Structures are given as structure tokens and as C-alpha cells.
Length: 498
Image 1 (tube, rainbow, N blue to C red):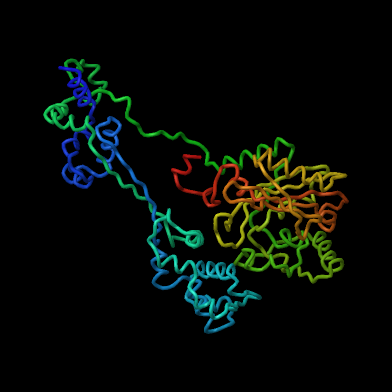
Image 2 (spheres, rainbow, N blue to C red):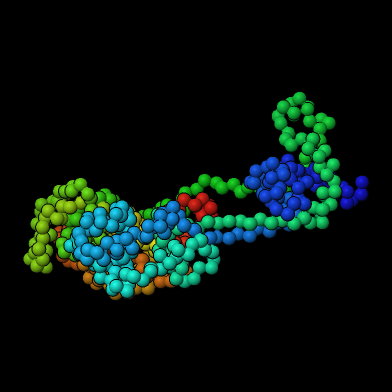
């Protein structure tokens, strides 16, 4: 046997059963034909082709493509119109409607109605006030097809060829349940190499190779049954499946790191319930009861009309500030309403009456706000909240602490500050960080608590530095993520890669 024949024999001896099962059909041009003639399933055939490519029997060309297609709800909306279009059509006929009446007349589910409201408010086509809704769009705006409607009617479309307007429409629709989806396809093509053509000339030897023993068992070793047997050559060059060890979810691990670092800096962790009263979330922070943040469109209210008990002495102090100092009306029954916590500062407010001076506190709080979900926004998200109480604290201390937190604790490279306004702090500031792809993003707000807040809740005159930062966005920067929704992804490929 010459050298060439020897190499062919080694190759034959190394072929696995699935490789041997398709070798004789490699003259076929299409993988579908190999599947049909070999009587093997598609997965096994493609795996065998991959093995043969590693052995230089064939050259394999895999072309991947992505297409945006209609989801189940997308098919329905293409036929029956998007929820926002159905709501606009209803408002065209009735002009002003109660919210409940508008939902019933438009025939939308609660989720569809909430989605339609969010979209139309974002486009400034409706006005919502005092539980009533009115169409403010011009006749031209109503008749004109929206970007989302045009996009739905154009599907399917190549994901890589989306134009800027189509990308915007895709992002808007992707935030809704199963309206559009991206489907990935792989087109596999192959061609025989010179080695492969030579291999096909030895079909008889390939058939004989089926008698090779595939596995050495304990029984064969115990009873010496391996003697006189021929074994298939072990192939150490072919790729094997990657093994993924168990680990914590990347976003959860990030939160734990933040918690550990803040604890190491001397902060104590604050905790509080997710369902709180308006008193702790708004009134104790001196947001007036007519404030826009207390509307249904900005806060989730508990449906069964639960009421919370409020400490009488503290309630009286808060009432005096609202009515006598700020001269705004205040109703204790409204303050007792229960809501899903929309801001982490509610935890700080509950902590201040028994906080130590000096003291440093932080919380990682889950918050809830009605919003249109996109690459930067969620309706359920996390915030890192903090307060520092001590004599002689200044605004410069606050800025220095925020920068230290961003760069050292969260690993952010570029930050900047902008003046801002919050009802319970003065002066106030916003912190922004630069994302490599999305640009500058607002991370949250901070400031020195107004005396009405700090003195009323602590009973003492002491400066209190306070901040609330969107920890989801901090995680995007730290983990190199371009879409905030990926923090809660179920995609195993994405999770294993992080």
C-alpha cells in the first residue's frame, strides 16, 4: 500500500456511522437529495457534512440570512388594522370619550388599548386628561398611513437591508407581543474536494468499514473481547460540541457586584415593599396631589382600592407643609391609595425617619411605570437609590460621589452632568453616560433633599444627598448591550456568550 492509499485508508477508518451513511451520495448537488436517498434526518446529514468538511472531504459554504416576518398578532393586525388605527377611527366618530368607553367602542383588549394610547401619545395625536381622551390629530395626519402600517404591509423583508425609517418601525413593532419577529435561516452548500473525489472511488472499502468497532465497553475489557477486533480511528481534529458550565445570569451577577461594592464603601442596604402608598411615594416627597406623575398614565394603581395606614403625627407634618407652606390642597384619603412603586425614592422616604446621622444607605429597587417599550425603556425596571446624611455635606460632594459610583463601581468611562428639576431636591442634577452605540443616555437624577423633606422626615436639620440611577442602563454599558430588553433575554445563545 503506497502513501496515498494509506492516507485514504486512514480517512475511511475514521469515518463515523453518519459520515459513512452519506458519503456515497456526495455526488448529489442538493442536501435535500442526500436526505431523501440516505433516509437520514436533516440534522444528522448536516452534522455529517460538517464532520466531512473538517476532514477536507468537502468544502462547506454556509450563508446566513435574517428576515423580518409577521408574527401571529402581526397577521391579525395586517388584516384588522393596528390597535392605534382602530382607536383613531373610533375617536374620529365620537371626538371626546371616557377612557373605558373608548376601549369598548374600539373593540380593543386592555393590553391593546394601553399600547394604542402609548403610541398615539408619543406621536402627539391624542390628548388624555381627567380620564377622558380626545383626538387632536389633523385630518391629514389621520388619513396618512403610519410608518408601522407601511412596514407591516411590506413584510417579509431582508433584515440587513432595512432603511432608517423601516428600522424605526421595526423597533416600535418589536416591542409589542408577537407582531413582528426575525427569522434566521442558514443555506448550506458543499463541493467535493480532490480528496473527496478520491474517497468516492473506494466505496467498497467504505462498506467494509461499517464492521469497525465504535466503542470500547467495560465488558470488552473484562472478557478480553477486544482482542482481534478492528476499531474506528479516533478523530482528534473534528470540532466537538461546546460545553457550557453553569453560571449566574449576567444581569443578576451585575446587580450582586453593585451590591457588594456599595456595601464595601460603607453603605447599608434599604428595603421596602413593591406596593406602596401614594403618601410615601409622593406626599412625603412633597409632590403635590395634582402632579402629572400621579395620573394613571404615569403610575400603576392597585385595582381593588386597598388603603394604607399612615403614621398620624407624620401625616400631620406633611399636611402642614402642603397646605400652609406650599398652599396646595391635600387629601389624606388620596395619600392612602396603593400603587406599584414608580420611584426608588419611596424607599428613602420610609428610611429617613429612623436613619442614623451620619449614615449612608442604598437600595436596588424594582420599579413600575407605564411606558412604550423600546431599546432604552421598559415598563418594569430597576433603579439604584441612595441617600447620605451628614453635617456639612455640599453639592460638590454629591457630584464627586456620583462620578465615583459611575467610574469605579459601574465601570463607565464618560459621564457628564446637566442641571435639572425634581420636586423633592434643590439643587438637582441629571447624570448622563456615553454608550458606544446609542450615544449619551440619561442614567438618572440626584440632588440635595429640600428642607421640607429632610427636616419633616428626620426631625433634624441635616443635609441629605440623594440619587436614583437607572441600573438597567448602567448594566447595558457594563455588559456591552445595545438593547435594554436583552437584560431579561431567554436566548441561550446570547446568555452563554456573556
